[in-house]
Length: 245
Image 1 (cartoon, rainbow, N blue to C red):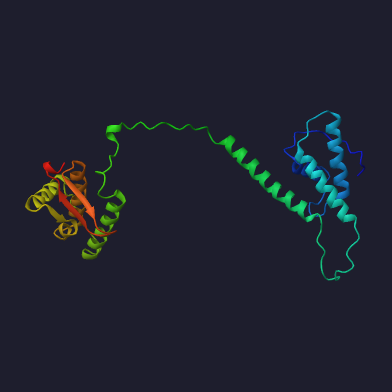
Image 2 (cartoon, rainbow, N blue to C red; image 1 turned 90 degrees about the vertical axis):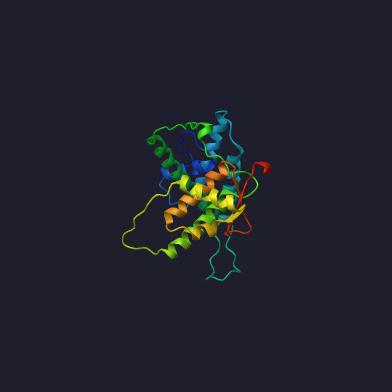
């Protein structure tokens, strides 16, 4: 192809985009680029932009220097000191790798652009839950909610061992109020009780769940304090008297 190739001036996104355009319109194998031909056409494009007084980004000139370097390397004679069975490095490999990588990302960009056009526009909505309805944290300083959850999971696992799975299970919901009364009675007898010990007195898994919910409810009302000596360890339930505040 002659050096007088007529070039249109679309908006290229960079020098690699221009090179891909030249390769595509001439149906050139990207793995076997005629570097002298592409270099002359690329420089002709830059000259055409300059003649139109268009502002050219510096990256275009960086690419032109790379093309000229590859072209000069390809014109050098082969190294006679290298054995015939050893392949000499092709100076075009660096450029080919850049073009392939850019081509892949360009196709991905086109895909996401089309996908974005098909997906309806969505807008985030501010939270509308009143502050009074939001979950309030437990009293500060004794134990975290994560530690409470981990201990409760351990209790459930122990209950499952005591009550292995059977074909039919009748679940009876135990009210939180009932278990709150149970805990209040235990704490009235002594100021500190063990959660694991209380669980041992429960007959069903439903009772254990009700007991745990009652524990959280009394914590919320600041009627008891929960502490733990070690991770996954027992929960120490301590009654909070009016003179403790």
